[in-house]
Image (cartoon, rainbow over all chains, first blue to last red; front, side):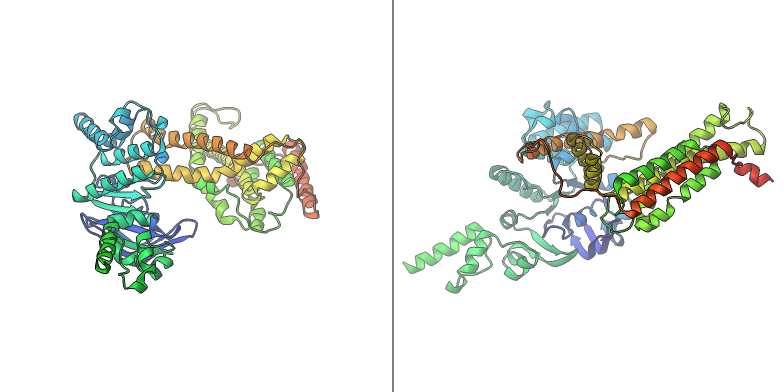
Length: 273
Length: 273
């Protein structure tokens, strides 16, 4: 469980990025952090594995303050996948890249081999195991980065903008994958601008604006509130936009799911016939 | 990364910021020469104090201090090396008779090592003021007006401009690797050096990638299409510039005179009187 209590953070440059965040992320929960650029989303999640330490207030991971533990210790339980895979890839082969963290955490040689194999399989990159990560395409590099985190099987997985720069098919796969992780009782925290992605996963959402939490609740509640999303500088999912425009016909306005939308519209059409 | 912070230009309007970069560079070079000229602690203390009014006039004291703090580690290293080398291999510089056993001899050695360290600090301090108060644009303009080929000027200003970008990127990469359990501050000296490989490789690869992208972007905007470039602004010397030239030349003359004809007492000798 991750708890932020009256969390304030000011960068050395004087920029006040977080202004009193109170938040609890339960075990096995799926949370999406949304909001405009510079709202403090990444700053917030960087507190969850201790990369940043609170200026005021505190962050507790499983009851321990992040101030008292090193990043390396926290990272064992909290995996953080950075937005740009090029900020971490450095090894000669994909295999070595994935083994890097496992070696840092002093896993035994046999375990490392097994976990690398498992991670390669999980992300469907076994055929690249001997390839240099620099020779891969953007989407593949992203998968290698993801595999290098999942390899040590952390309980919490934080993903910063996982869908950026991915084609539709990759995004779809990634979405399935994230839902699958969550189904395995992993805690998943996603920082994203991608409303469609959030709409399809329907996690708990927190909307941030200027270093504060604007609102929190399930995606279908928050993303269908036009006032709220405007405040956070995002637009509602396309499905919701259609239903908002058709509100005069007496249709519900809190729809974000394509299947639900289809059902409502079909019912209507059938009734008319 | 605090060292970089101490060299990053910040737009402020002050007498020092508005000085001609060529003259400022001349002034810094004079300071540089003077620092090399003297090995005497007393002289170097004076040299350290000379640029202080300059720093206050430019209102960059905080950033300037940060550059000094960033240089502290290297300064300590220089100090320690000088003490050790001076102790075991006395040279004519220190005028210490081997072995160093009396208090006075040790004090002389201490003074010599402090002087060498302060010399380094003076160099850092003066160049830091120069870069803190000179915009890369003006610097490029100054180079061009000194009849240096445009290609070189452009390469130079681009390099200067990208230092803060690289510093930010290095920080992100460090975070990404720490999140994979890398402990930068652990192990013996060799291990610590090795710890930086996962930071340096992504940094270099990204820098090369970015430079290729930059080159393509420049060529697509017809870089180098015209033989003779004209500038919107030209640098012209103002009264304050002439004053600074005068100060610099006077400083140089006085210092050379003192160096040649006036013996400066050592602090140890002064104190023991």
